[in-house]
Length: 448
Image 1 (tube, rainbow, N blue to C red):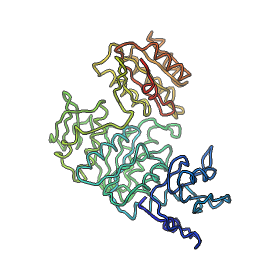
Image 2 (spheres, rainbow, N blue to C red):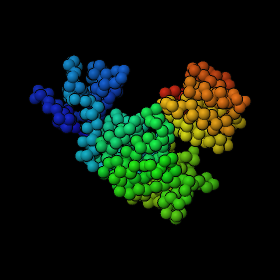
Image 3 (cartoon, rainbow, N blue to C red):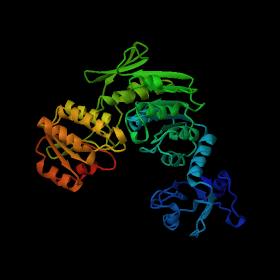
């Protein structure tokens, strides 16, 4: 935090501390996890646990104060308690106030895929000119984003933020906390689809990133489905980009291992492309398009391409003896799975192409359709496929019908032991799954 005193935080949250609890101690960090050190603890209610049950543990971890519900009547455990009507709204309100006081330039990105990678690319390109803060990891939720903003120190010029959602209205709320000057939609797909009737509804919810009156620039991919249905609200300038349509104002392609970019029909950049996955060209083009409208030159962009890095667990090559793993275990949906499979196919490595995938969750009525699509993509690429999770049973059925090797598992431990026995020298193995299955540790703990 900036820092702020406990008294100042209480005042910002419209609570008056008693004179005997003046609260002059300074707060530098905030947390919602009582197991982690943080000067200020937000006692959030949860479906399975209530943060108020962990006030004593928060104190043991070093907390000085806690934001609690007005309904809480338990002990303080030596903490300064700041009672509020709604703890989550208080967290969001405090973040909103801090951003408003600082008045930084805000760049926000959303999308069903690629938003974290695009955020990382944005930060790397903007650092050529600005003091940049980027939200850590995938801190893009109603809790994660405001909590991350409480780590601001006050001297940041640009905030690069990721905004996610699981249902309508959530991104609109995040834009009130950190109103974007420039906002980006990377693409849309059937992710968290259980709460929507289809892609149009998801696109509508993603379009909320353009809903704030402060937004001057709306950057978006013309390659996404139903692009004509984007609601731009009051965004003053629409800026499209594409890797499929050469007529787009910003267009990029891969040519002989080099990325080539055109701006309004003029070739403006050509550099060796250091990143795996052709789909990451889209993410980079989104970032480059955005920073061009924030004063960064093509020379500066080109100079930073060789420094680009993907976030963790994205298309990471890991060697275990003679076996090479392509670890892409951050998350999974149909599009990202098929893109990872195509990257596996493109690599000139390995005698066999093997894939280990988990089911894709939160798809509701679209689950079977999306898993069938993954099967069709995988059939053309892999020699052996290993699946985990009930949703992948349809994939095994389709592989069996095609006479291709596919193995289904309910147990991750059994899957782990099977891979140790069956993977062969010089195999190239894609590991791709959702966070629930944490398939990345299959690589981390693999023994030849």
